[in-house]
Amino acid sequence: MIRALSFPLGFGLGPLFTVSAGTESRVEIIRLLPLTPPQLGHRLRSASKPGGSAAYFSEINADAEPAYGRYPLYVISSVVYLIFFIPTAYGQNIQTVIIARFLGGIAASTGSTLVGGTVADLFESHDRGLPMSIFSICAFAGTGLGPAVSGYIEFKKGWRWIEWVQMMAAGVLAVLIILFTRETRGSVILSKRARKLRKETGDSRYQCRSDAERASLAVLMKVSMTRPLYLLGTEAIVFFFSLWVATGWGSMYLLVEAVPLIFRNVYGFNEGEVGLVFYSVVVASIIGFGTNFYQEKLYQKHVATRGPEARLYASLIGGLVFPAGAYILAFSQGRGHWMGPVVGLTMIFTGVYTIYLAVFSYLADCYTIYASSALSGQSLCRNLFAFAMPLFTTQMYNAMGYQWASFLAGSVALVLAATPWVLFHFGPHIRARSRFAKELARIQGEK
Picture 1 (tube, rainbow, N blue to C red):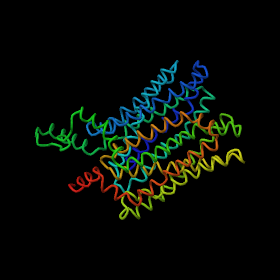
Picture 2: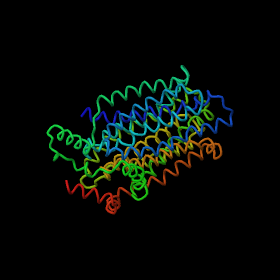
Picture 3: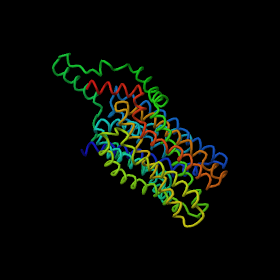
Picture 4: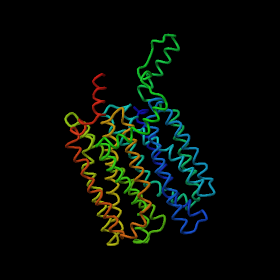
């Protein structure tokens, strides 16, 4: 059980430190380099754009695993992720930093792409709530810990030490993955066992059906690039859940960029005090993690009658907490104590946490062996929103005003809050029309 739980914990730590790299240090990197103000804005956007390109590479991981398994992908990715901190820390120009961050981001995307399939391998559907929640709190809390911790590292040691500290943490993570994790994909385990028996006995009758059905590398690459997009474009559940979580995730990063604007300009906070505001994300993660225990009780009680939709109870409320928090943030800033906007931020991040966890758990339950592809399509959409929305945060808040910009983010979230309610009531009917759902039912019938 401990080893099993180490999977979601370990693969959650990767995104945690990746997020740390992408927040406070980005501004300090560009601040150090010799750029004029117009170049600063252009380069800042350029530095963010590789994240969107890297999001697409997560699709390759999703379907390379049938041929090679999950374990090799995790090991290779963790080592590559570790290595590319070196050119980032030593970089003397923005081009070097962009390329290194781009390649490191590709490697770091493996954890969030494959974790749903890994958890589905290790746990029955009724036991997946806790491991997915452990992964979610690790990945989510990093959004707050990143700017809060790295801000003080930069203040004391300089921005390059942000990269070195992350490299140390990534090194520990890589060692833990290599030493204490194993392959979890059933077809790959059976294939290795059959190969071993053929070698030991000389009997060629030991065969694995997955070997006979395994496609060529070219076909696998084609599938890896198309199946997540196919699911995203044809499966209503994947599309609307992806849009929902992408909006929440993108809004979260938009607000991460907006926090310094609001608390510096409205409340006069300095750099260190602004960093402390981001602990609201950590508090929200703890609240969301605690809420998940109640969600699990509801799931265990209703799964027999509700099926995968029993994963959605917490998100029904969390989807409404998100826009409520945005409205509090919008209309409390500048009208009283700074705790008003902080409470709003905490509510926003708590709502996004429940959305994030519900999407991962629900898609893993619905698509089982295709979970990695479904989650890859979702991750593509979510990461594209996350990299794009911060690009126009400053312009949007300056043009609309701080209050109305936050109000707009909340209003969009309010519209999309209908998503879990629709799926909660009509999910079985939607899945009944799904080609993938029918294929999964056939496979389960054969078993």
